Image (cartoon, rainbow, N blue to C red; front, side):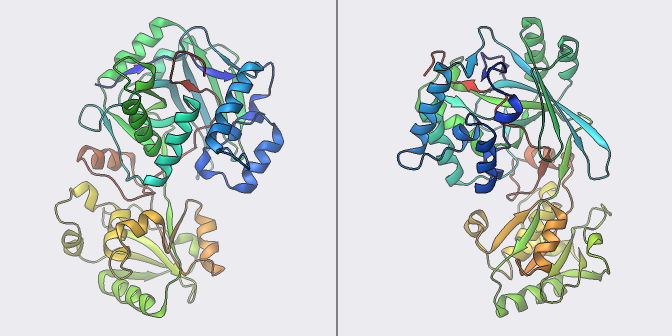
Length: 422
């Protein structure tokens, strides 16, 4: 059963710093220019801890030293009593409407993957896990929450306890408004634990950090109930009306003439090609469940919608997989195209050799049109139900099969992995 608990949060003192100046997007979406901009807002920006760059010396020990200094200076303070945090994100959807996603920042016990416990939905890579593990070892804290989906309605337990003024209200560059409220009421904590205990937890984002937390707990010898046996998470209900999933598009690079020809032959053989006039119409509609996606190359710049002719080809390419997995556009693209005429291995795909990803549709089209990518495949969003079905089958999707938006903000709270300050 899933175990969710409050925690004695470490957080910035809003009397010392502006929370909007010290929070940041997730570390893995920040480039060098973005990092410089964040540090320019405040020398105490969380990016100095979560994505440290000390120059000379060990970057992870540098982050640990900064964390200790900021605690000593009172920039970071730790609560005396356990809390959970109501977390609200108001954002603009692709249709132009405003939506609000509601979640709960708490700590969850790390366990092996499996029925009734925690389910992953995407494959992980070793590089990011080693990076996060070294940072966790050095700092003794979770710097950012993983994003977890659960069954049931927990938000209604928290809503009556919200004060009129949140601890913070931050508008990020995407226009998303983030608000958070600490809740110390033990009755709310108990109600939350009861609601979530009957649910499997599905990791929506943060697979690498979850597996890092599990490794850290094991290597420190943490037992049940020990602080190091938990990780910071934002829990969102599968039924939350603000829960949205968007697509991540695939861009191909370094295609020589022979691979271009092999790709062209495969597409003409396996797919019905529908030429369209406007690239903005590349992505097919939801349709009848048949595998479909958009395609355009940088030479002809002619957009097409592709629809799989015969599902037998997919069954042959993906033997032994569930129906939920075989009906994933991303899985079909990987099996029939990336691993087919392009001869990419699973390692090639994980290392992004000849492959890149872009969640911004207009930017992905522009990169193909500018010749920055040789070709692009433009995918539909994967429904949350299908994400759940694949996880229930014990399978993991190809990388970047989902893009949950908006991203969680880093720097609202940190989770100490030891009761004693480091």
